[in-house]
Length: 334
Ligand code: HPA
Ligand code: ZN
Image 1: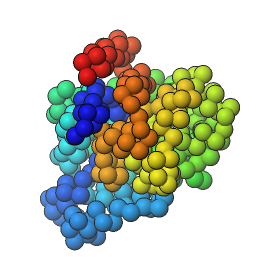
Image 2: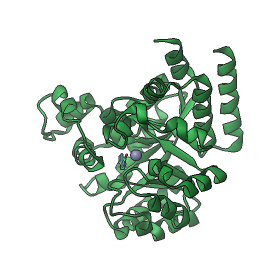
Image 3: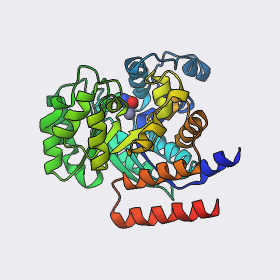
């Protein structure tokens, strides 16, 4: 490890864009397939990894939903979350706000309560990393289905920080979910949405104006609209950017062309996150490392990204201030 790599791993950081189902490593997928006697269309762990070649978001989603079929019991969800938090802690993550996709499980007969009880127990199993849950609606399904999930979530609202919107973006604009996001807002939850990953800048406008989001997931294509960039910068909106995901899903052709430093230069509160680390080749520190090397980022930019990860989080002002102080201290000593 060179000096910058050590700095990246060590600096206190938050992860704000992580699909817990996307942290299912092939080894655990095989173990759960065996444990639950679920057939998977792969002969070996190497076979699974070899299948992870995607040319767009849908290519990935098809494999991601297939992989999630091995998750059946509370113990499975516990193991999944505990494995992620152990890896996150090793990457210097002090706080993570993780997405879960209940519909991926309830639609195959796994009760909502099994999913959330297992995840909450896995989240609590690793010390030193605080966490929040974000319930993500699948946008390729209709709003009625999202409302059915919302009703199942209602008794858990004290354990859910926010709602999100993920899955196939093109053809499924944020406006499709206006009412369920309004219900979540009325219940006091935070709101986030994937927008501008593959979808046009108009989807980012809709997420802001119709869903009243507190944070934008990805947001890359906002850069095509200078007035939108100005608005995002002026309002201090956080963007949860995912460099290795962008590379694997061909949102960028080469990490050398990744816009992370351009975003910072434009005054955007960009952060670095791993999205679906088991599928995209790296956890959060690897995302920082890969984009730092490709874009020649220095320590000042790494510090800025780490600061943004806390200021963009849903922690309290006091908690954010405490984390920012640990970053200052780390930067002084390193
Ligand atoms: N985009 C949309 N949906 C997703 C993603 C993503 O990057 N990861 C998991 N579900
Ligand atoms: Zn995502």
